[in-house]
Image 1 (cartoon, rainbow, N blue to C red):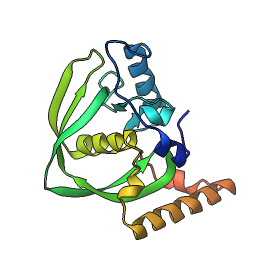
Image 2 (cartoon, rainbow, N blue to C red):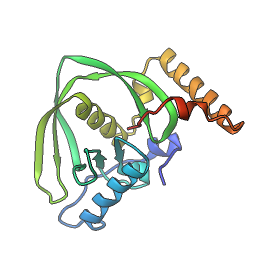
Image 3 (cartoon, rainbow, N blue to C red):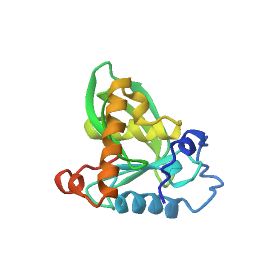
Length: 180
């Protein structure tokens, strides 16, 4: 179950994953994150969205097998170049808005075998990595929007939920968006 209470996501203080003494089986945990992400049609999912307190998240690949799980992720450097993209979140259903983020980031994380990985990420990979890392730090994508943009996104989501409660599913049929 994905946590949809914003307060709980902000309360969660995440801690590094221990490969020496893992709290649960590392490979099974990675599989659980990937399954939850695919089940909910997400581009990424953080451990604290599922109620875990660990610094771990998954990012979608072309297939489940190509999806990756990042243990103890970090950003080593940010590009000065910025870009704006629309984001959504599995924990904030129907909320979408434009967010400005660095276009490229130098990332580092450990894979499920504890091997250090790193690369210069750009495009959607950079976007998802930053979004999910924010979750681990108690930051939501709406925190990165301007006040007016956030207000409009929340109002639109409220209208969508009200329409659905009256049996109108027009939004789902006309718009197909994936959340991070």
